[in-house]
Length: 322
Image 1: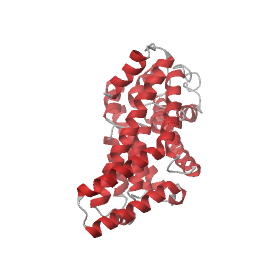
Image 2 (image 1 turned 90 degrees about the horizontal axis):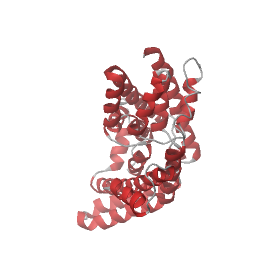
Image 3 (image 1 turned 30 degrees about the vertical axis):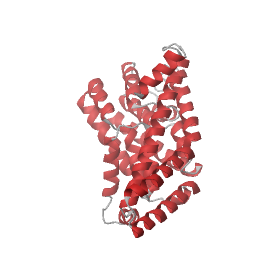
Image 4 (image 1 turned 45 degrees about the horizontal axis):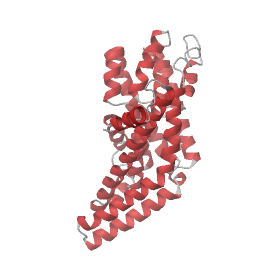
C-alpha cells in the first residue's frame, strides 16, 4: 500500500516520469520515509507494551551476565537474519532494543545481520549464483553479526549513547516500575505507551527525513557503471576500494544483487563483489544519519570502522574460497 501511494503521488499526481532520476529518487524518498516512521512507531509501541508487562531490568541484567556464554549474540544475529529489513529499516528496532535496556553488543549483532541476510537476499542469490555461494554468504553474514556484536559489546560503548536515549531508558524504567507497583490495567497504560512512541517518532523525524533524502539522491543519481573500473580483477586493493565505495551508498538486497551479477559477469571477483554488496546493504550514510539520534559520532565511527574492517577481511576470504 505504501508503494502504491508513492507511485500515485510521484508518478500520478505530480506526473513525474517513472524512468527519470528525479522520479526514482522522489518515489524512493516517499516510500522509505513512510515505511520507516511506521516501523518506528509500531516497534516503539510494542517495546512499550513489553516494558509494561515484563521486568526489562531483569532481562538486561540476565543478558549482561555470562550465563548464556555468548548465545545472546547468536540469537540476536539469527533474529536479524529472519527480519526483512534494510540498514535504515533496522534502526527503529535497534532503537526499541536500546530503549528496552538490551545490552548494546547484542543490539549491534541484530543491526549488523538484519540488512545483510534475509529471504530476499537468499532467494536472489540462489537464482543468480547457486547454492554454494548462497550458503557461504548466509553463514558469513550471521557470523559477521555474532563476531561484530561480541567485539563491540566488549568495548563498553554505552557511554557513547546520546542523552536522549538515556533519558528514554530512565523514564521507561520508572514508568514500568510504577505501573507494576500500582497494578495498573493495560487499557489505562495504553495512552501513555502510544504517547511515548509518538514522542520517539517526533524525536527522530528530522534525522529520518535527512537520512532518507541522502539515500534517495544516491539511489537515483549514482551511475550504475561508476565503480567497475576500480574493482576489477588483478587489483590487490579492489576489496577495500569496493567496501569504501559501497559504504556511502544505500540499497537493499533486491536492489543490489542484479548489480552484483553485472560485476561478476564483467570479471569482478566474487569475493570483491560480495564485499561491495555487504558494505552497501549493511552500512550507509542514511543509516549513520538515523543513528545520530541515539549514538554520538564517536560511537557511529567505531561501529562503522569495525564492521568495515570485518567486511574487507571477509571479501579477501571469499576470493580465496570462491
